[in-house]
Image (cartoon, rainbow, N blue to C red):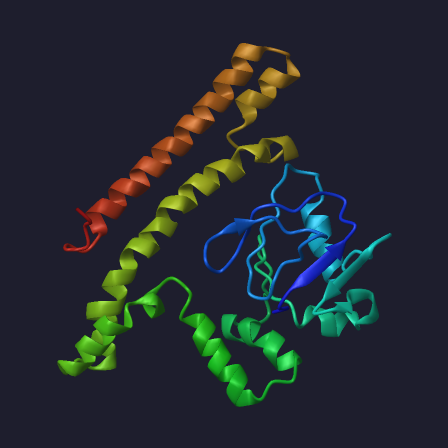
Length: 242
């Protein structure tokens, strides 16, 4: 990940820069962000936040001004080499479907020429950040191992029970997403829950339009409530937080 980036002549001010110590300061042409400092771009949709980030890694070429990383202008760096020095947290899904999760994680360090051992270590480190059995407190796993539990017994008696709330959270979310997906399907002649709302718009009948979408929201809330109820019933005893 790049240590720091400086944008000269920005089109919009950058605000909300928080240093490692927790203090908030303004970053901009007068005071570029320091190495290790966290900078947050804040602003309404369309103000240029995404465009600014895309200019840093040259997905969009700047029309004027200069962007430097570590004192070197980005326009003088090979785009592929530049992008391999910057870390990304992608908002939408960005995995290659023909690869496993492990292969997706190891793709960038492998492409950057890291040794096989370093790629393997990095993949293992990143996999442990994924919520699930591997996110179990290492102290609990160590305690289970010390009392003589086998890896298989630890999986079913320690790791999976602790992962159940996370799994059930996904189960609760899925029906709500299905309701949201089924609603606009009506606009593509696919049926769906939005038929009444679509009819209200077509016939310019506001009460029918409102009723249709109120019923859709109500169904989504019911699905969320049922998912929460299932989670409470299936959650292992002892995991409740007082």
